[in-house]
Length: 288
Picture 1 (spheres, rainbow, N blue to C red):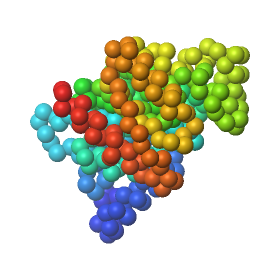
Picture 2 (picture 1 turned 45 degrees about the vertical axis):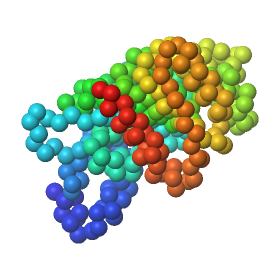
Picture 3 (picture 1 turned 45 degrees about the horizontal axis):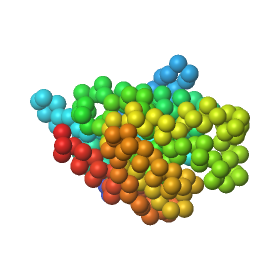
Picture 4 (picture 1 turned 90 degrees about the horizontal axis):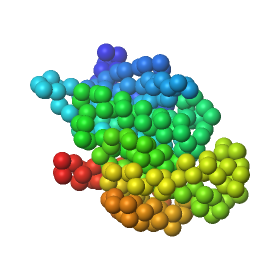
């Protein structure tokens, strides 16, 4: 009620900016509210045996449809040095397009239990748990759940699909797909970070690198895949191209789109969601 009152006194774009700024401060145990337009916003934690994962979601207003209307859903997985609320502006904007959008903070990020495992088993389990949540909602199309991941979020998304996540499509942006091969092409700073998380270089902790390499599980990825790659990212284009070829060789469907590198402001608004992700989602849904 309070939100509805103040929303009448300030411009709509300012209202949504205030709401998104408020949501950035952290995640309550389970907090749900409505915007002046009726969209529902929820922040909560998903429990796991090893801890909890911070989640943020929004869905269109309930207009009393009988039976209840079902919407496509997109799970958003962030890259390095980010968290679930990094997508808040995009989520609040695109929920108006008739979509349910959800993001989580991967283990070790935001208010999720740590430490970071660099697209490892707990990150994959977190993504699987988020997909399960979406699949249980009455207002989600069961044949319309998608994952959009960036960086290590892209790698975790691909591995979750290989582990059986019931998704209709993957959009993977600037991910690593063969971590053993990628490691040698990274900067010293990046290699140091990976060694610290994984317990050594590939010749010391080879299994940890292999289990974080989606290319090894390409035959189990059944959903269509859109690969996005921009120049100047730490993970090379050659790795993305090799992943594309492997998916196709294993009988899967994949395509690669080259995109421009985003600036600091663009990384906050995530224009690729409007320009690449949603068109891909709409294209896949036309075949359903």
